[in-house]
Length: 272
Ligand SMILES: Nc1ncnc2c1ncn2[C@@H]1O[C@H](COP(=O)(O)OP(=O)(O)OP(=O)(O)O)[C@@H](O)[C@H]1O
Ligand SMILES: [Mg+2]
Image (cartoon, rainbow, N blue to C red; front, top):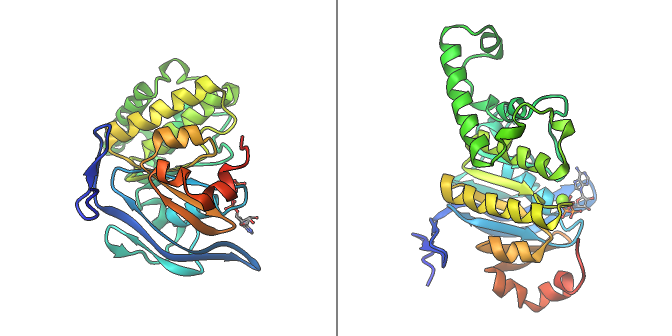
């Protein structure tokens, strides 16, 4: 039985801890549009938590609430056992939550290495000016950042493209660079918005492996939105199912797969 306080060990030997984030009765409105309607669920430490549902269900909006980018109209977000206040953008950046986007958001003209370095900006103590001038402690700090980034580059097997401008890369590799940039922030929670959309089978397999390896190696709690049910089944520990802004299912993948509401709303129809 899964221990709801202390956590548990997954069948493949990964350690899941206690509750890291709790979303309580979250409602999010954009004018007249209700993107999220009274949804509650939790995210455990070390967990791979999937969010699935049809287009427009509110999945990306939910990721934006988790990241702190959107303040919910109603409801509370609890993080590390404390109610999280509404925050300004610079405070959000320091929460230890990093993400990738549904549409790739990288700097095309910059190299892979420089793009990944931007992921460390919120961790940098010395200002950008002194970094650029290579002064004293800034130089030492720069070296430390480079070491961390090189470790991620090795880990994601992108050494051979580190100097390549991102604009020249094929789609699958761009997605991997985006993952690298998110990891560079050393996040406590990693949010992935459709990390495998538009990928071929081989690219998907690679991405699955990296997501699992990242979880294993860095102990990163991961929340991912994904349409490919095979991927969701393989990767996730628990799944939240959304439909028209509501939660219609929540549990381990095989339980959710057999939930009639979920089958009717989502699984009965084909998805890309
Ligand atoms: N910034 C916004 N302003 C107004 N409406 C928005 C905004 N963001 C999302 N919405 C609306 O909220 C609803 C949920 O959108 P959201 O992007 O969260 O869905 P999704 O589940 O991620 O969909 P998809 O699978 O297409 O990515 C939609 O009706 C959308 O049009
Ligand atoms: Mg979306």
